[in-house]
Length: 343
Ligand SMILES: [Zn+2]
Image (cartoon, rainbow, N blue to C red; front, side):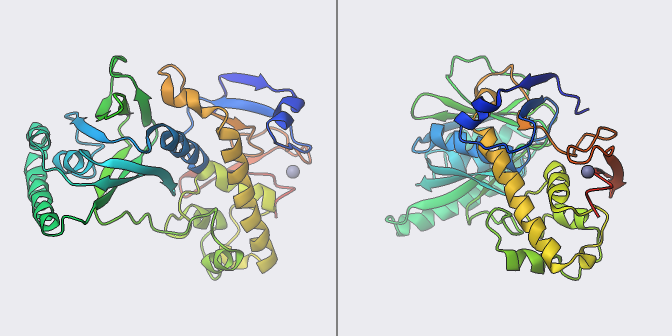
């Protein structure tokens, strides 16, 4: 599944020119065509979207008839987005968050869109709430309405910024027409992606792994009887650490995925804290150079990543000690580790 379609060897000097110091690690970038966007990819996509659409205003929203990706009713999504200015696009966990500001508009379009969906009834109720909040805002006309639009890409979701003339890809579920004349489209063939709006602000839960202090990190895992790998993937503890980066972090920290969290020393947890941040930061740094194609073009899918050290390398030699990498299944997910480097 993770067999790379292309292996692209890069000159080490080329990576260094971009400000990376790859140390003794092989400077190989691999396009992982089937990979699910994890935190670093979502961060890069959110940054790319911020550059492209921040400051623009959503004029009109079209929503398709498939309700699977809609975690808020279609009418509510449309009414929340239309007329709003996109203040900023950022990442929270593995979610893309659009901060919106402006007057709410209980537009006709929204109710039309709602009636086209199977969730029409719910949407109309949402519309009423929207209208009610509009009336409230009439009483305080100086209060600008803020809301957040949250997109989770799931496994195959994509956000595309394009000209209106661009062909509408199959599996397009939402098109936001922007005041600049461009369109922001959400495409998702497998429909594990999620679209929702949060007038009161979005709470992604858990702690941000790139911001968490060492003390807080250690406290999250202390006394937990679950395997450390499962604890790393628990979104109520850390938000946005996925399977790949959990394996890679445990390798760098020298900890086996099946070790009980409670049995790990304070010092090792400190090492794991540094490893998680290091792995995610490196991937984000790398992502910036490759992801623009992913967003704009229709053909290019998948993510370029620095070669994983253990993930997806079962049976291949450890890059440190040449021992074959092992794979175990933990809570239904593959975990990869080096039996010699990790204790
Ligand atoms: Zn090893």
